[in-house]
Image (cartoon, rainbow, N blue to C red; front, side, top):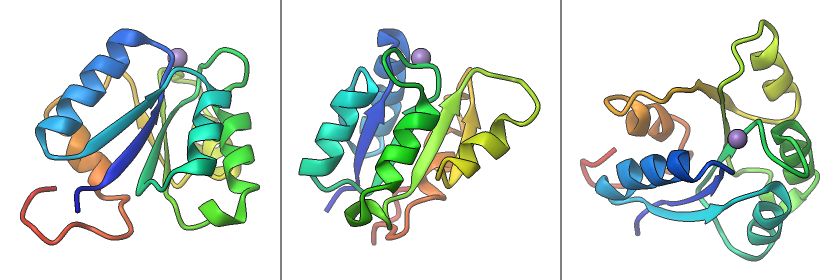
Length: 129
Ligand code: MN
């Protein structure tokens, strides 16, 4: 079964690129344009990984990560923060909020999918990332 990714990202172009790259490698991508929509989806559907933009309307990514981590049912779902912030300490903030990892924007199309696949707790059996 292909890994299901919840993509919480408010920028349409970023959503398009990430979805294109992931679907190209066989991932199933479910988009959410803000934190509350993402939290609702995460509470109702099963995901193998959550990709989380940090700069979001309504709730920032750190608040979304803390809310996801407050749900014991999601304890084993990896959360990877994706942010354009280049400030020192952001990695620690994301990790402190419950994220497992951190990717910086702009994403590199050559390495994006493999960077994400490293965080999957249950890698797929085939040779795809
Ligand atoms: Mn954003």
